[in-house]
Each structure stands twice: as structure tokens, then as C-alpha cells.
Image 1 (tube, rainbow, N blue to C red):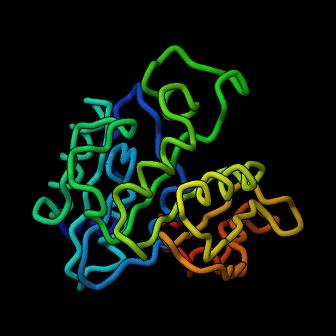
Image 2 (image 1 turned 90 degrees about the horizontal axis):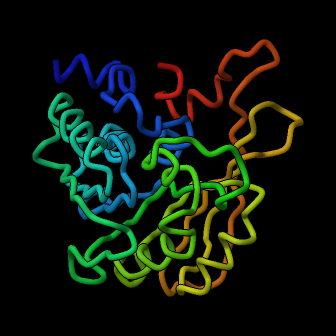
Amino acid sequence: MCEEGRAYFPRGLEQPATGFRFSTDSLLLSSFASVPAIGRVLDLGTGCGVIPLGILLHNLNSDLHVTGLEVNPEMIDAARNNIGTLGFADRIEIINGNVCKPYFAPAESFDVVVSNPPYRIEGRGRSCPDVFKNAARFEIEADLDVFSNAAARMVRNRGRVCFVFLAERLTELINSFTRHRLEPKRIKFVHGRLNTPSKVVMIEAVKNGKPGLIVEPPVILYADDGSVTLSAVEYCSFIAK
């Protein structure tokens, strides 16, 4: 089951029927994140554990330990089941906690912090009756600045923070990062199709880093016929499964 689950990842991952469903954005972030060969990674709002699993599958020969922070009990159960099924129980830990109170570990305990935070401001978009799903989509209990603050607190000095977020809110994201001494170093835009506006952006910042930003070549997800592009699959093979 372990090897088969890894081969077909992310297919077959357990997700609560009424909870927020992970998207391509999380898979892309697991490819974008720069992680050391040895170290500790934190995922804020880990959901069913898809980002920690993706990071470790990209870095099977590393000596990484990943911690996922999640507030939804059903998501926590699903994440732990997924981690066990794929054989990573000794390398991924899921903690029941709130990003608003990131005190489960001492400050600066992690080398890298990643997150796919809620994209929408409450009231801008269609809400749903499920409380946890709503919280995953909209800034209800925790806004972007809360996630940036938590990331800045938990990452070590000169450590990396990687977020995936809405491209239309890039200015807000950069401003939030810089308020918390997270200096943007890499940006990669994600486009649905060639010659269409980017809807999603991935950004890496360094805590107390010096200025110097690289805008990487974009990811173009789909060809005109709707198939996933070869370049996107080469960047993140998980999106083709």
C-alpha cells in the first residue's frame, strides 16, 4: 500500500467529504519550496497533509522532518491516515493547533515554513455552510497577516518562507511579508493557459534577508486542447496523476 500510494500520489488521498478539497496550487507549492537536505519544515494549515507529503516525495533521500499545523479535527484524522498509508509516519507530524497561536514549539524552530493560506477576504465570493471549508477559503479566523506573522515567528533567522496565493493580491502579500521581516527572493506566476492572466503566484522570502528578487519563468498549466502541458508536468509531476 505504501509504494502504490506513493506512485499514484495524490490520487487516493483521504479527504473529509464536507471539508475543503486540496487543489493544484498545493501540489505546485510542494515543488516550488526550497528545502534543505537536513532540517525541519512547517506547513501552516496543512489540511489533509498534501503539501508535507509532496515535499517528502520530492526529497525522498533527504533527512527532513515536516510538521503540519491544522485546526480542523476531521482534516487532522485524514492527514494522519494519509501519512500512515504512504509510509511517512516517522517523518511527518500533524499537530492540532491554530495559526493565530503558533506556540506549540519555540520561536525559530524551523528551517522552512510553507503555506497555502485562505485566498479570499470574507464577503468577496460565495460562502458555504461548512464552517471549516469557509475558514479554508476565506480570511475569517485568520487573515494573510496572521499567516505571515506565524511564519516569521516559527522560521529561523535566514530561513525560508514559501506561500502560494492569489496573483491579484500579490501587493498585499509582499507588504505583509516585509512587515514581518520576510524579504521576497523568488516569485513564480502560475497561468491557466498561455496568454491569459496569472491567477496564482508562488513566492519565497528569507527572514531578515537582503533585497534581491528573482522572477522565475512561469508555469503554464494547460494547452489549448485542455491537456496538461509537458512543461507543467516536468515542473510538478503530481499534477498529471
